[in-house]
Each structure stands twice: as structure tokens, then as C-alpha cells.
Length: 367
Ligand code: SF4
Image (cartoon, rainbow, N blue to C red; front, side, top):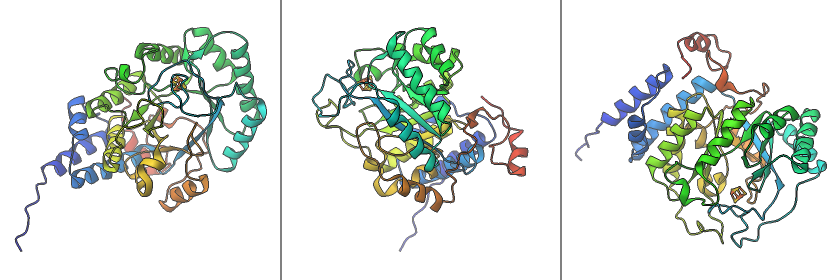
């Protein structure tokens, strides 16, 4: 049998880029677009191996876990095409008003038992203004903070004034989740009741208030690879601390119900490309993990993810937390994120504590 010649050009180019990111020099947009367009499984597996190295270098073996509570469900005025909670679509998803203290306390206790760093209060509404509802939201945040079991986070939609962001910060909020969802170019195909710019403006108020930003998007909505690349660079420009990557779980009744699922290798490649572009950030695999990745879920860490949403999502189920914790331990990773901080802020080394790594870290320049 004649041996096939293996072309190692891509193998070498991926390694050069990986080495450069490890040394603190970011990939350019052209280089990142080239990575997003890798096609063969040999090239994608090379990419994953380098993304894994970059994750280890900057994040050590710690895996950051988050969970969410649906603090106000359904009947949302917005028309996001992926969302079962929009009042524009018939989906049968639950509807209720803003929750009482008890379910929040329960979620915090459960999170604490499962090594989960943060609990996010997530509300299905357009946004938050000054008024009695903001008072109630601030009460829940204060209770969560005072309980001391987890970091209080929230995702409460669009904010239109600095005062609202400041009130949330004063109540004890540490991190606010507000996804850009997709590229600026593709966003109008996901929602027409508010604009990409409204989301950027919200993030501006939050940053000015001194809150950490959890912002990412959804893949598999029909966007191109270039859209995914642009989203990653947009998130880099706004200085997102945590970058959740959701994979569309098409919900019957929504406009995206019949979207073709992304191939598993395409999803893993996307996570790896995000790691190349955002080497220091927490890259969190969030909604759609179980249904889209199935037996390949553990490969998210090799693809460069350093964080994972556990427990059930807002309207869909996840695999049991115990199974996720076992998966993390089986890979030699550590879910005990005891510092409860944002390691993308650390300038020197990855925070893993190894002397060699700290020394290497001195060469790394934060971008
Ligand atoms: S604003 Fe949030 S809850 Fe409302 S439709 Fe969009 S994604 Fe769903």
C-alpha cells in the first residue's frame, strides 16, 4: 500500500499562532478567521490541543462553575428568535413574576454544595428601570450577598441609565450577564425589538459602575464563521470578563425551531478559536451543551473552555450536576474555584501557583 503524504503546513501554522498567544501576542482578525475556517479533523484536533495549552497556561486546572435561577419567567416583550420566553411565540414555557427570597436562597445553598462559584438571577423582560421592581431586585441581590454562599450575579436585560447600574453595584452585585448574542451584522436577524447598540450601551453603564461583565453569544443561529469571529473580537473590545458560549437548542414555536444543528467538531473548533482570541477570559460553555455535544461534552475543556454552566438552564434541562463534577474530576481538573474572583484580571502567570508558570507569566503582557 502506498503511504499518503501528510501536508503539515496547517499543523505548523497553528503551532506558530498557539505559541505566539502563549507568549502574549494576540492573533489578528485575519489569522483568527483562518482558524475558524479550518476544515479537516486533523487540523481541528491540532487547534484544540493548542487551545488546551493556552487554557492551562492562563487558567491552570481550575474550572469555574456558574448556575442560574429563572427569576422572572416568560411573557417577555422582546422577539429574540431563539428564545422560548418571548411573548411573540407560542412555546408553552412557564410564566411567573419576580421571585421571592426562598427559591433564591435554595439555589445558593445547592450551588454552594456543588462547588458552584456564582448564582445569576435571570429575568425575562426587556430591561430594568428605576422603580419598585429595581428595589425588589436589589433586595434579592443583598440577600444573596449576605448569605455568603455564592457570588451574586444577575442578567436583567437592557439598562438605560447609570443610576440603575450604580444601584445594582451598591446592592452587592459583582457580575452582570448581558450577551451580545452574535456579530453586529447578524444581530438584526436575531431580534428587531431592540438594537445591538442598546446592548453595547448597557455594557457601558455596567462597566462604569465597576461591575464585571459576563457577555457572549449563541452559535448555530444561522450566522457565518466570520460572524462568530467578529463576535469574539467585539467581546474582546468591550473587555468581557466571562464569555458564555451558548449552542442553539432549537425550541419548537420559535423562528429558529428548524435550524440545522452544528456539527460537534464545528462547535469545538469555535470554542478553541475563542480561546485563541480571548486567552485570559473565562470561556464558559453554557446553554445547549448536553443536547448538542452529547458524548463529546468533556472535550470542551480540551477546546479551551475554562468555565461551565451547571444545573438546569432557564427553560431546558441539563445533565445532573454530579455527572458534570465527575467529568471535571476525571479530566484532572478542579471545580473548587475558591478565590471567587476574575482571573482574567491577573497580570502575572495563570494563577495556578506553579513557580515555573509564574516566572513565565512575567513575560505575558495583558492586552
Ligand atoms: S430579551 Fe431575553 S427573555 Fe426576552 S425574548 Fe430576548 S432573550 Fe428572551
